[in-house]
Length: 246
Image (tube, rainbow, N blue to C red; front, side, top):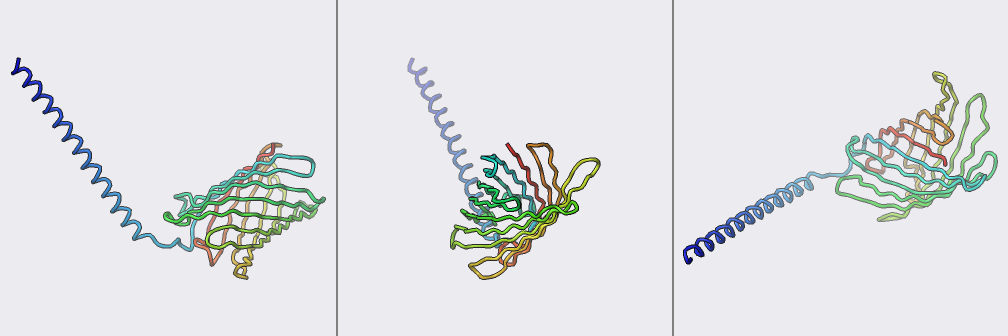
């Protein structure tokens, strides 16, 4: 009886010791993993530098429009920007606004936009932007349409707020390709930053758009941005806009 009890006690202690050794082994493995991650992060942090001056990005965007009445539309939009040579998310933004038809050729658009950016992997920034735009759309002439948008925006961000004026001139032409209706467009937009009293950015774009049905339309474009102050500032962009009208 005593020998049987002794064997059982010895077996239990052996099992406890085995469990302890297993736990100790797991703990050691975790410590090694933590040290590897810490040293890798320190080494990576030491090699991190400022964002490059140039980049290649992809900008997909979705816009949803809800008519409130015959003269006013509610718009909700969301956009992602994939940068660092199209390898990582660098900008996420979403907001809403109103499009008010103030006349046959004039549309007024107050809006709000929230922006989160990651210009480098170890740096984040946030912005809340209030904008007011006035867009003049001239009558079509020989299948050409000209629009001129003037926009003033107040940017609430860290470390300093700023105010910026933007002007975009766009020319469109309706064409038929393979029996389908398309819009070809070219646009140029300039930015004036009142906080530095200087023209700071230019965006040139060329693209094509098509109305799929009464609810959906889409644009695809190439844009070139030049900006000597932001990093990255000089950017090649492939963009798309999916518009949904409810």
